[in-house]
Length: 254
Image 1 (cartoon, rainbow, N blue to C red):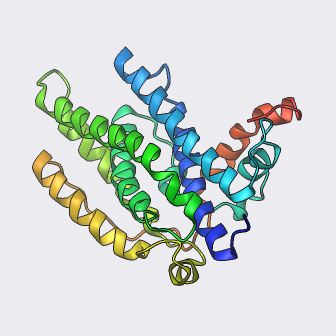
Image 2: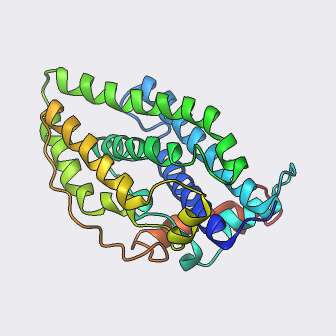
């Protein structure tokens, strides 16, 4: 299968977001507030990285066990060849921020994956049944945990911490909806049905309603990310971390 430049760029955008969010989630494995969350975040991180690998394999056509082409695409590109959003690149140094980012991202994922349901790239559409089952768990986990945290009274003010996390992430949350570079061509080719701008409006509606239900507050601002080739200030350190094993052992496979 040979992808058009627009299809390649569109799917690479999704793959890089999955890769970076999965990598960021792994930082919380063994560091969660209790064992249940260690296990849940381990599972969610593994799912997101698996989705990235599936997309990288589709893009490269590399189905081999060694995955050399997948590794090269995932790890060995110049920084401005990546297409990830700033929200996915952002570090979350406290649990409240990790939870809020997880929740915001997976509400977006529901829309982005469903947007491929009738894709002209049949291999991409074929990924949906398995991925959507996993994404449904991600959304249920994030929402139910927010409900539980806010329902429990204790010595810490969970609501204040979650609102602080929202204030921290709101300025970069809209980076999820910075369009793929060749989005217009991809839509014309039938790769996806709706633009990221249209999906973003639906996401904002859902997020705003859920925040009101939860009694949380956020003032979302326009993302500072100008386009998908623009990297956040945190990307270089993340990319170095991702390549640590390859630097030590160039024969290692992701």
